[in-house]
Amino acid sequence: SEELIQKARKIIKVLQQHSYEAYIVGGAVRDHLLGREIADVDIATSALPEEVIQIFDKVFPTGIKHGTVLVRLEEQSFEVTTYRQESDYADFRHPNQVKFVTNIKEDLSRRDFTINAMAMNDGFSIYDPYKGQLDLENRLIRTVGNPNERFSEDPLRMMRAVRFSSQLGFTIEDITIDAMEKNAHLLSHIAIERIAVEWEKMIAGEFFRGSTNLIFYTDLYKYLPIIAEDNIIQEKIKHINAALPSFSAFIAYLVIYQPDITVDEWVKRWKLSNKIKKDANCLIDVMYTYRNGETSWAYYLLPMDLVDHFVLLSSLLFKTEITSVEIIERKDSFQIKSRTELAINGYSIKELFPERKPGKWIQELLTEIEKLVVAGKLKNDRIIISEWVANERNKA
Ligand code: ATP
Ligand code: MG
Image (tube, protein in one colour):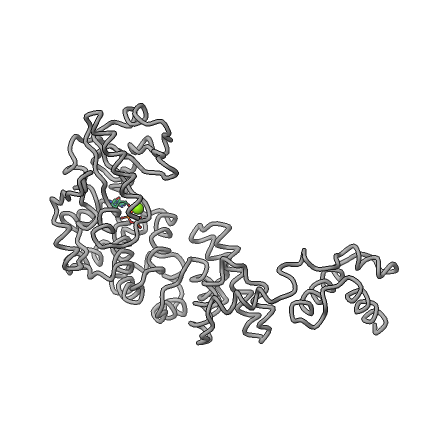
């Protein structure tokens, strides 16, 4: 975290040497002041994108039409954005109109919340024209300027307010909540992909429990696909009492309670990635297997990167108290980690049954063998497995 800030200061100094202004802005300043982990550092500068491109060696014009250039320094990426007036999507009726401005104050004025509208220079001085530090102290989320105007300009900010309150445990100021109620319907203008980004951060927030109340209280839920339409899902969401590590865990949780809405439907309506789809399906598969009492098999099917997600889901669904470490140890104790490590494959099975036509049965038999090996009931040894297969054949 500190290291990131130090590297960002180097970029600021280089810009200053070229007689431009530059500041660290947005989330990094907020999280630095809160002593929270910093994910990425954004820099705002008076230099125009072409000027930034000329100054630095490793630059990538990733968001040039919004004034953003990605600068690489010592294995890290920094978004360097020219002071500008509108946000990328400000005023959903006229998106993508970016106007560069000449001073940092104006740049900060377009930002959503006071706690996100501070700038820090290379000497760690904070420029805070909208009293973000005071709101940090009071743990308050307030828009920069009139909340009604700011939400009608960009309705996504309402979801962002809830997302930040979930991550930080801050209260949303009363008149800001009133403005959310009033403008909730405008969320229907916002691309679902943008809402999904905020939603995923919201459900993973430490204070998620309170955020769901806000989503329902303000009527924002009425403009969220699926959630708007399904009572069972609404009730379940109201009762989730822990943060969920990912969108896939969220979907898996809800599909288990409301199987009428499938993973495919969630992914389609919310325009989610194939990775989320794959993970959600996998988690559901593992949860059902676990619920069937096939514990070892469930752990075997569970990929390493979903172990934490499973731990959380199973504690929510089955009140289990198993830890990630315990699951990883169990996974480690199995004779094989995946089917490819099985001492026998489809071809060798086929050879043991010269009279049978190839078909689905080969995969089924392989799965049966795999389960026995994972359960420790069959040694992962070519000869022993072949003997077992011959035995089964004779039984049949
Ligand atoms: P995170 O730690 O989750 O990245 P963040 O505050 O950096 O939080 P981003 O979505 O990365 O949030 O946005 C960076 C900054 O850009 C914000 O801090 C805010 O100043 C500004 N910003 C982002 N989205 C909007 C928006 N819709 N309207 C106004 N300002 C915005
Ligand atoms: Mg950020």
